[in-house]
Image (cartoon, one colour):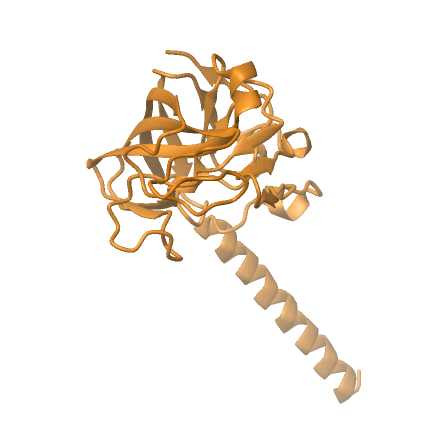
Length: 243
């Protein structure tokens, strides 16, 4: 065997050895799993497009993963009825170890009004407001009073605008995002307006203001649900949690 062939063989063996050791290390650390190595399944990213004019977002739930186990880490997403409560659980940010964040949420009450309540004045979209923030055309505020508690041991950073209103109940073809809330921030609606660091064991009480067309409210005022989950992936067959 000539010197050139020997060099090629030795180089190939080194590459294979390094790759094998790397895979063993990644498996040991939980960064990858055997499912990653041998499965062809993909998790579909169903990003929901915004409708700037109405604060309404079209939902692609029928295209989504069917359960949290499909994602490789626990994801809990529920629809809360007024008065219901639930403990939402999430894996750590790297989704590789059995470390979870527990977020208690209670949908305490819902109120419908054209008058601005205890929340920041939001910018106009399709609705028309007077100088006090009261709506004067065919839209109304739907205000959801919600309590949140981080029951974990670490700060849980999330956007409060990840809690959507499902005004048509289980038929959540359209969801509405939070337009304003009682932020107590000196300069509302800056880049980090919706961002909140939930400190462990501290109770947060929010008035989440959604803006919904009056005809939707008239048809579905008794079946409005809070779409609750600080996750980007939508799940089908979301359970409805009753009071």
